[in-house]
Amino acid sequence: MDQRTQAALIDRVFALADGDLGQDIPVTRWPVENYYDPLLFDREMTMFGRQPLPLAHVGQLPERGDLLVEQVLGRSVMLVHSHSGHYRALLNVCRHRGAELTRQERGNVRKSFVCPYHAWTYDTDGRLTHVPDRARSFPCLRLEDHGLVELSTEVRHGLLWVTMDVPGTPVEEFLGPELDAELAVCGLSSYSLYQDGSTSRAFNWKTGAESFMESYHFAVLHRRTAGQVFMHNAGAYDQLGPHFRTLAPKKTLRETRSLERDRWTVRGTATIMYLLFPSTALFVEKDHINLLVILPEDAGHCRVKRTHLVQRLSPRLRRYWDANMELFLGAVAEDLDICESMQRGYRSGANTAVTFGRNETGCDAYRRAVQSAMQSDAC
Image 1 (spheres, helix red, strand yellow):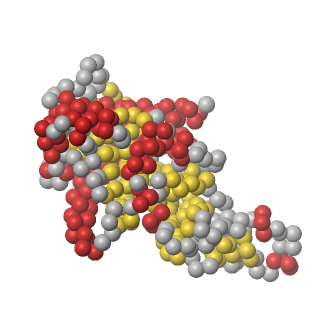
Image 2 (cartoon, rainbow, N blue to C red; image 1 turned 90 degrees about the vertical axis):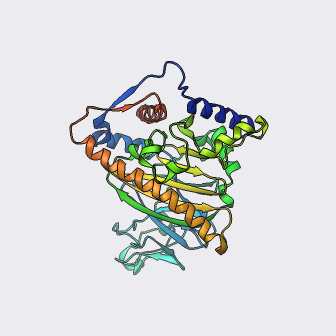
Image 3 (cartoon, rainbow, N blue to C red; image 1 turned 45 degrees about the vertical axis):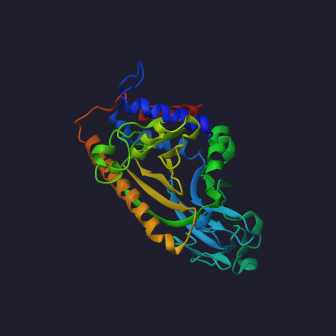
């Protein structure tokens, strides 16, 4: 992000902090059943399957043979750093009778995948290499025609992007020139993995994404965590294609007003949150990055994957990183808990609509981006 853009964002934050929301911004409402309707969810998943999803950072698969298994849109996907040096996303399904090749969540494949049912064997690039008793049992079978199903996969900005339904859009095109350039400046590929994990939660996937699109809740929900650090109700957002950039200003940003304008900078004085469509939140801090990927399971459930990346992986910095992670995870836990509470509220019949105020226009813009993507997919 260039300095002019940073200064303009800070100007907007100061205006919001001073009470200026702009002119003619409406209050909007969305039908509450959008958060639990199974038929709408099925249509959303058709759209979801065509978007490149950043399912891993290369730091999670550093060695050849390293494996991560993810459950994505009802399918088991093996992310593997193959022995040939490539990163692959392979469906965890034997091409013989459909058994899962592995039930582990992560590990290292020393040589090959062996089906536990009949020992059909595949290398880490997904090629079928051995069928027991092939000459007698499958005399006409060609090994090259029965490799594992590979999904569209691309490494960009240190992230392994997977598209569940092929053909996949090139990630550079998907991000667009402005966002692609900003992620390049972030330098994710040079970061090291510090910690990762996941949790299953009982709320609609859109609710999770919306929770990161406004700072109206900071002084209330996060009053003992992030609310101690961040300014209340002063977040500024920009839409970049279907994606979003949101600035969550820290209280120390106020000190910027005493500096010359050409010295205004956001990194360190605010969290830059990129909402990578459809439901990945990338939180950029001064010297570390937190990645949350929200993966839908059904209309009322999702899985939240978290990956924490740091610039310097050093034992003497462990206490510093742990303190940062504790603050972040504390606030995220509060967000996820309230999302579950809202999901129960949606199903109660108390409200017919979800309301977004004039200070929550980012949430409304996000919902419009989802709607637009679904309409484009239908065409």
